[in-house]
Length: 169
Image (tube, rainbow, N blue to C red; front, side, top):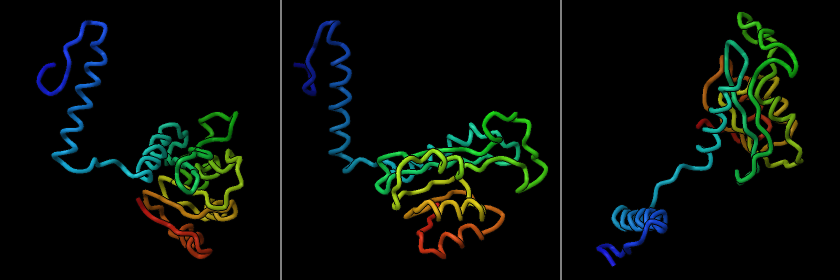
C-alpha cells in the first residue's frame, strides 16, 4: 500500500487506480469542506431550456421551454420557437414583433406532452406571452419558472390569476 491507502497496480488496473484516487480525494474534500454543493434541479432544467434556444429558428428572439413532472425527475416535452414543421426557416418575419409567424416554444413543448399530469412544471427562458400563458393554464400546471422578462407582464398575470405559482430563476 502506498500513502493515502492507494495500492500500486499493473497497467491493466490503471483505470481503477485513477477512479480510486478521485474517490479518495473527493472524500477528503467532503471532510474538509462539509457538504457537497450541487446545482438545484430547477437550475439544471432551466439550463436545458437555455440550451434549446440554440435550436430556435426565429431570427428575432430565441426561446426554449421544458415541461417536467412536479418533482422534476421526468421530462414530458420540450420545444423552441421557430417556423412550423416543414416550412422554410426563412419564413420568420423578424421585423414584425409578435407577428413573425413562428410557433412559440411553449406551444411546441405542450404539443409533445403525452401525459395528463395536472401538476406538471413549465420552464421557459422568457416570460410567456398572453396566448402561451392561456395554453399553459389550460394544459394544467402547478408552477411556471421563467428567466428573461418580456415586453409585457400580461402573460404572467393570467397565470397568477388562476392560482399557478410563478418564479423567476
